[in-house]
Length: 158
Image 1: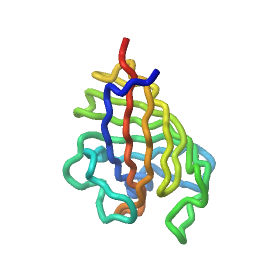
Image 2: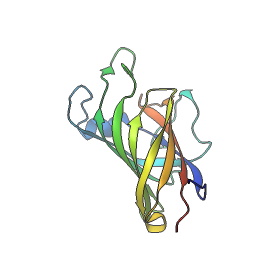
Image 3: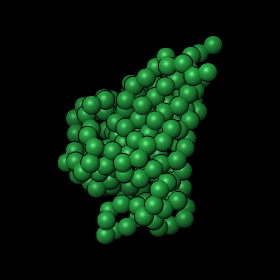
């Protein structure tokens, strides 16, 4: 049974520039990589809808990386994907200057939607972590990529 022993919000403004630098091509059928080098922010930092925040804004508490297989095509006219789910992804949330991390796997949904993902492990103070994370797609930021909210609920360690 899942017991909430750790719950926090991590907010990630995804960065379109980093995606382009990592050769992300949403219409191609191979896995892509995305990152937000200053990308984890405390709860309450990001809001729903179209926002003007940047992944380079001060206040980051860590770094976020995602490796995904896209399931929907990008629409340049709407700056959104043409369906949901968008992708199946493995995500790494690095905290405390890389000393601690959490890893999750699951679907990525389009703007305004949320899904529960499996927490499949971690390092440092999160070694042997398991549980779930609620992944919310809040909207877009100044780079026209997504702002995400992650709410973790980890199982009690035995």
